[in-house]
Image (cartoon, rainbow over all chains, first blue to last red):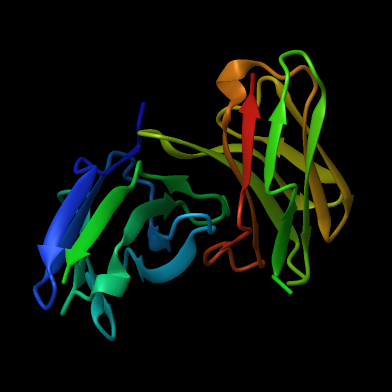
Length: 112
Length: 112
């Protein structure tokens, strides 16, 4: 059973426009969520996080929204840049477990 | 030097061979993890360790074993490699807050 799902394997967006990446989860015990970005031949790197006590967290061009009732989070990138082209993973954790369950990833391509 | 170093970066091995993937870190983190990435399946947890004397199985530990030789070193072994263990393997570390991982660059393993 996939507890964390990213239903869009890929997404293409024009440079300067908004990219929206989505993630759904099934385990209501998850209370901390992360987004990672991965370039080819590199390990994933941390992008942004959100705790379940919040519904939004912003860091520069990146904003994560959390809808607990829908068990859904999304990552917004505004404006999108060609350097944002990468695979994005969402991950979820339950407090005290110190381990994360990852989604399957969405490949974002930002077109110049 | 990278904070989390994985060796080798690439390896091709034959079915039935024993192989060890190594991970070392300079972050001073207590917690270390091994994940594998497969297309369409995201990152799945194989084993994790919260300190030298604490080893735990993840979602997909069958066919794998680990050794935590020191706080900074965590090795993953495939006792008898099989083709469906062909994947990209990542080591990760985290501090005691559990607020996200630092990943290595990965080991691409091919079992023929």
